[in-house]
Length: 402
Image (cartoon, rainbow, N blue to C red; front, side, top):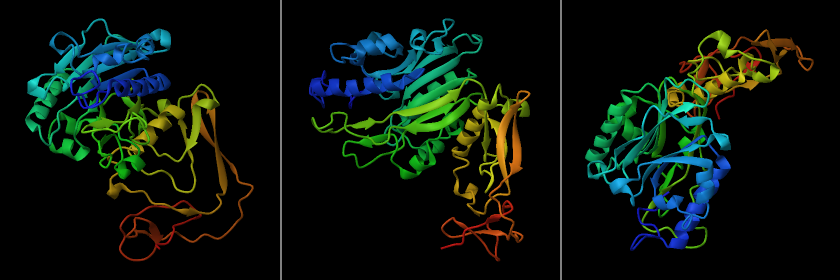
């Protein structure tokens, strides 16, 4: 949101006023197009909400209410902010009137005025107001060159979170996952909403330097244990200059958006809730196996889940634990299955129905051999030392090593 703390309004800024307006317009278009229930902003400048600078500011303020770290001695300084989509715009979250917004840090002790955390208590519109969810937008100083300030800020926020049962903590941490894990702080123990395995593996994720040659993963979302993950985090596809062809980025860094979809309810645990439905459209046949499994079924999908719970199982497969190499899943080359599976909602529960497959042709199957992991992480049927065991479904033959 704020280009290197030197926008077109700053003396000797890193961009012209016209470039600042273009960047604000780009961010505003994204907010209006995505229209999320909540937006957590970092390095956000008060000018972003000024119609004289941001021509879409009126639209943003019509769609969202703004809670920010601006005010008093921070009035003209960049900071953090939380935007809540207004009910008249279809928003589902309301600021809890029982509690006040909190601002943590934002001074020299945490690395400067922009290094703050804005904490906003929200409740679900029409929901239970006795247990709010705190949305925390945070910007932390870099651990690499401002370790004391970064850890002081994290500790201050942790002290606040330790008194809360439900929260979402997200923003610019200026640290990758391994750096966060090495701090030994609460952050290293919280649930992080992982981005997709493809994006995580590419290294091209949430931030880029002015040369656009480095693209580190330093923006994260952490959640309390009783919130559900409905979808792994998604990101803007490619970091790019916000100015188009009108000027280059100089001496600064910028970020692409990170989007998460969460449930205010925890993961369902009872079998009844995992398969709860009102009609057939609430159900799905899936290869996802129940928690804590990371790997799905091979060759035949037979699991009947509610679509909501199946989304949670899919998100679980994208967690850091499941993405570890030692938890890698086997792949298989499968013959035509003897049966087909469909799903129906029967008496409020999703039920798998098995029928004969008319395209199935009888053939003799040999007992599956033990599965050995190849050097390239593919699998084959072979004798010898077993690296990983699995039980392939009838009719499956594992691909051979190259």
